[in-house]
Length: 408
Image (cartoon, rainbow, N blue to C red; front, side):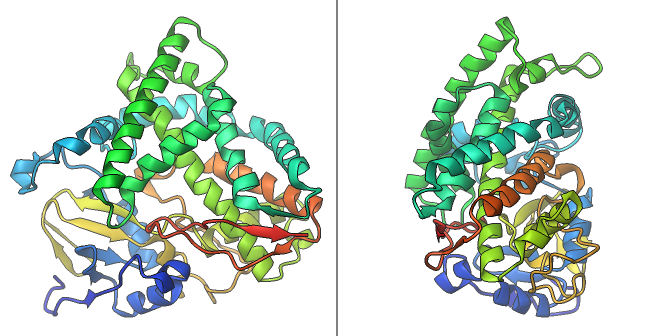
């Protein structure tokens, strides 16, 4: 607890509809409690300020995993139930969940295959795909943009990048949605069983493609991951499979909702899109402000790797903390008038993709997709407007729309 003070407790159900639809007034109240507060609904300390979140994302006293320093028994944690172990058996190889030195090795290998592929070369394909999708609904006068545009762009791009059939997109999405649901607040046994089944199916599917690419390399990410080598080390098959699953799960989930949230914000605020997307420089600045203004991920959790203290909070090894990305991006100590969508804002370094060693490996691709898909959408459909008020999905700590009904 806070040294010399009473526990700063806070209650707010993450499933409360008022909070789901607009969490920002609650975040304002959270920040008023100080550097940290104890979120009773989650049962751990949370940090809502930009400076605190930025620092803790980079703090080596905290990590995503503790298995490299202590067993669950040593930490006093119960063993995971048998029915969810298949999910975590796959997750244990994810760069999102491991710490150095394993993380360092995986990240180095993945960067060589992914980041070094020069994401910029995908620009023509993303533009072509954006136009093709709009062609399908431009004559209808109305559309659910989330389903017809925001979702297929990142999924198809990643499927093509990996080298798996694009006609598998719907199945890949289904598996991904079911797996990602494991990170929602108040998950149920039904969600867990569905996630495990999806994990097993997805793993089996990817194993076949990895084996095929080992025998017959192609110009795709799977082949590049297989070939990636650092100091004589390569990714194991299990690491390859988990990495491919992570690329799809993380790579589409954030981008889908970043596109949806951005279009909603632009239309609600009556933004002059011709000015916002006038050239590459203004487009890049506009995208950064949109990512800050309504991020698709609002919390990132970490564990204390040792008994320590952080911003006045005493923590024991194994204690979990919540880093409030959505709140940090609206911190008035960091951003002037943070609730205002200001596409001319400067110094707009936000925490939407995290920071530190777990900074999102797919951030360059997500940014590129937004920088291409948003201008093309508004150029093609100049009379775009909200057909009805969009509703956010009850999936905290994710923050994305159920649908985005538009008309023109």
